[in-house]
Image 1 (cartoon, rainbow over the protein chains, first blue to last red):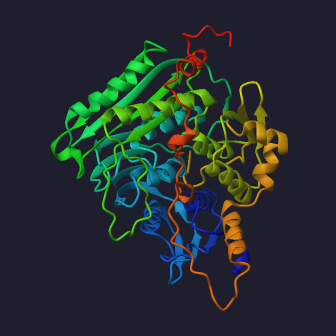
Image 2: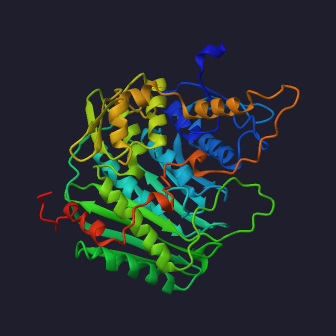
Image 3: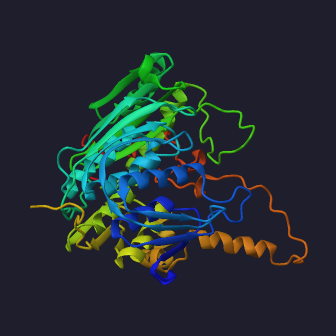
Amino acid sequence: MSGSNYIKFSGHQFITQRLVLSTLTGKPIKIDKIRSEEDNPGLQEHEAAFLHLLEQVTNGSSFDINYSGTSLIYKPGIISGGKINFDCGNSRAIGYFLEPLIVLAPFAKNPINITLHGITNDNLDTSVDLIRTVLLPQLKRFGIESGIELKIVKRGAPPNGGGEVKFNCPIVKQLKPVQYIDEGKIKRIRGIAYATRVSPQMANRVTEVARSQLTHYIPDVYIYTDVYKGAESGNSPGYGLSLVAETTTGALLSAECCFEKQTSNENNESEKPVIFNFETPEDLGKQALKYLLTEIRKGGSVDTLSQWINIILMVLTPEDVSKIRISKLTKVSIQLLRDIRSFFGITYKIKPDPENQTVLLTCVGSGFTNTNKKFT
Amino acid sequence: AANFKDVKRKKNLMQIVYDGTDSEEEESESEEEDNGDDDELFVKVKPQKKVSKDIMDTSKLIVLNDELEDWSDEDMIESLRYRFITGDGNN
């Protein structure tokens, strides 16, 4: 095979989305200049771990990594699925690994039944709570109706994790196109305040701040307090809050924050930054609330957190028009649109709606079908 | 939607998305500019780059504190009421 068969990329950014698109389309990729200019060159722990996960989820994939880890050639096999047990480590949270899996899982040969170990909540990656309450419900619109489940068995706060989740996903022949631009009005707000290896009072205090302000807008506010003890509480103390506003048309607008222990980073081996330092649970509650209100003001039928999954699922639908309304394209979404053009040759129509300062995203699906599973 | 108006004035969004360069390339270009004037014999030691959230691969958008609006302001709180079913809907 000549090198010209590869779709070429450079840099360490957006590696997981490119690996996912490559796996879905069966098109091999070559990524070079992976941190080649940096003191700590090459693939990092979490990226290497993701490759291991991909190896387990697929069958017949090949990975060629050069000596310094700065160049990667990936030839995707088929998405085999099945029962998998995987330790994500503590370099990145479970969300980093689980998010890409969500879009691969429906197109596997066998339904995926995976147990993931690691950090369940942090401020960098989407928490398992928002994956469960915001991302997964949106798969229904694309026709993945039943049998999708994410169970949080153990909480794992940073830095030492120790959490455990189980993810089950059914397989489908093809998705359904989605036309979903009516953002509706907010009818209720739900939340989850968790506490692990700290006093349950922390979760209560976080909840109180958020609830008292939100009931100012609407009476239907319920924040569930999820307290973990003993073997289910992971290796580090932590607490946090995720909030979801649900509209009359089923749009889900979300925000979250969690407590991060300040670690003395003496060897500086990780590039993972500490994003917040909350003095009190009340500070954390207020911050999560600010995020939610900002998200509500921005509007859209698809919130900022869910942009990428909707964008990627839209291109995987039959050859029909899909349309969604978002607030402002994130950097990740912009690159995802460019990468989708590289893999599928499909461009999206991106049209601002001046009326409420949102953006309408339209595309014609690629006619994607699950070729791994024999349907009778 | 903070940059929405600027965006609209300059180019349409499709051009920005599809005609723009990849973010990775933008970064390396600006680095080259920095070193452009230097004698090639002496490579300027780059200061240890502080890791910013911008270059982390994550779908979660991290907005720093100063980019968030001040939601303690009463008018600000009221300005959001129309997004709820309890609002009057005239907005």
